[in-house]
Image (cartoon, rainbow, N blue to C red; front, top):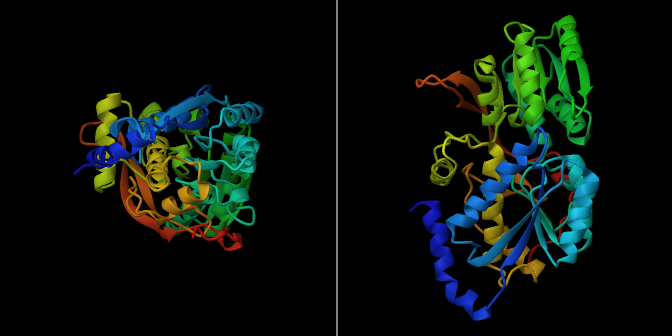
Length: 393
């Protein structure tokens, strides 16, 4: 039975309960980035989440839901205002934020008002250690895991010197530290770029002068497209290999840069070729609904966030009025996931495997990301030990 049929069966089996309560749909507030160069990131999170709702007949966990979506425009002030407005509308369940600096503005407001936040992307160390919160869950990763997996891959490939590039904001700074946590070679240069930067000529010149064995870059969305194109145009890709994590090479970026990405080494917790029933059903459903639009890991994380929320709602009807019941149900559930094995660590962040992918040309002549090997097994995060989380019992 496909995950689509399983979700629909769960909805039908609880229809009498839902009707008996004559319940209004549970509103889920999605604050995300829908405009600008990074707009497709939020669009994919939104559409992956909505796909899970549609597959189960407009419900999650047998509870009718309504997804309320607002564009933060990648502006922290906007996100906080949106959160305040949604909280005033009695929304108790939130998701969708793409960027760490935006999350810092909105998530504390959500948690301070005793609402629940399920992250479908960014998950800064701030909310993973001492400041962890029982109403904060993550369906994606702890942000450092991206840099850690890339560092582990660079180390395993035997590169002795590395040059690091990332945007000048919280997640960019954290990924630099994370990469060096697992990479034991010499770092010969570090550059912080602007979040709206599109010209990387100065960075290319510095990389060329430093002559590292490998470059690790974190440039999400449209920034990643610009960086990789310019890296290839500068003739550096043939001289100095790139190692990146999924935020710098998803399927949209790959489609945009094409053969310029050939041979690129990528780490990820998910890929569209993962051979498990939930992922196969998700990829098939996504392609059916969105034609040839590629499924990115943002879409997969949005879908998984919906499955997490479904697990919580299934055991805490009539919704999230009882947050403790929602949390207990979520933490006690066997959660289906597109990435296969999924479980929460003690800080309610994922413990999961990370893989090495490679950009190659398929037999059909198009560029794809091919899963090649496992990089990290059952990998949690470095901050969980600092989290003193109350029991869900």
